Image (tube, rainbow, N blue to C red; front, top):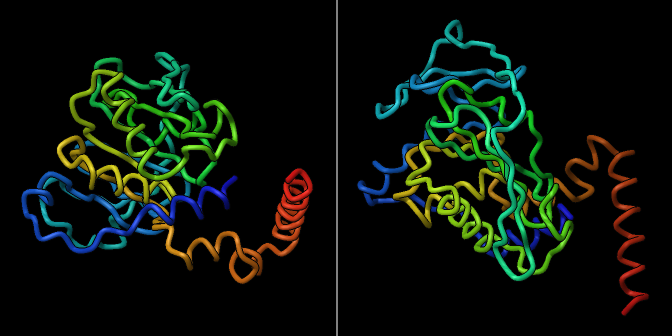
Length: 250
């Protein structure tokens, strides 16, 4: 599923180039674009086990932080969700979502990676539960969203539309923060580019823009296949088996 979604979404997304629109850039304050790291804004703390958290002041120019100022943080504790729900976004797909944190808190959206990974309840732990109203949702074909594994109508523009549909469904005027990791970075950028007035800030970690070389590194034998050969062999064998079954059915 991840490989199939990666190929499909790479076809529908071109990484944004330099924006000259100062109004646009003022609206979308990118707090972090650091591969493998999370950036901590002064308005709240976002932490991750074994991840360096760097302080920054919202609305100000980012400056290098001395190594001694880097802080190791743990995830926030996560309890039962405030509520769960399902949202039909097409004649085929229905999204599963959860709300965590403070009921009247600042709205924040978490976008999971993969593509195809789905959300876990622990992802709410990136956010301070006394400050944020956190929205987690499983993207099309993922997790508890239905139909699971479906590629029909499953592309980047559709997922961007899903983020917006979920915002309207929940009665949220603007996302104060959108956090994306890996494939979630690509989706966060695509959503912010399409709806700049609906996103106040982005936090991007484990940056991936779904370029061909990134997809090949993730799902090809010259990238992750060299680092974890046994796991890659099991993965590629399963893909070959599935491909053979599909050909036989046709």
